[in-house]
Amino acid sequence: MEKKKIIHPDRDLSFVTGAYSDGVLVNNVLFVSGQASVDFKRSQFVLGTIEEETIRTLDNIKAIIQAAGGQMDDVVKCTVHLSDIAHFDRFNEVYGTYFTGVRPARTTVQSVLAEGIKVEIDCIVQLS
Image 1 (cartoon, helix red, strand yellow):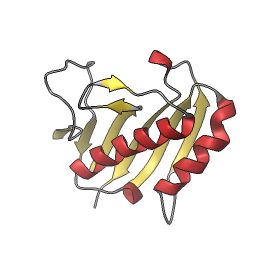
Image 2: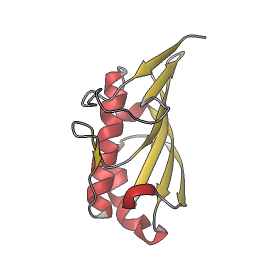
Image 3: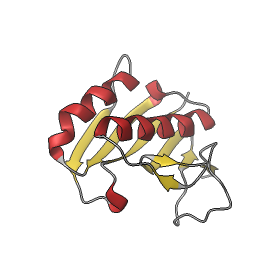
């Protein structure tokens, strides 16, 4: 089994991050690590409304998927962590705009999230 590391195209490689990869590609399946509202050029969280954080988070996921040669409609499964489940409807409204056709399977839970972020999403992507 050959694994290929996928890096967000805006990531400043001079900043040390955790012991994980943005994405790992194995046999045309991309596993995207939990992403949040991060400015990768500055390696800093960008806090905002649930809508703003969801947009930035999904844009980060989209960039990682595109770096691996895929697109958002290739996503087959997402796991979503919300800091407050009361944000679900507002989150879901934004989330739904990122997918067309058959939407990914999804699990959404309330979780304690670091740094005051409101949403974290990881996903599995089947590349063609």
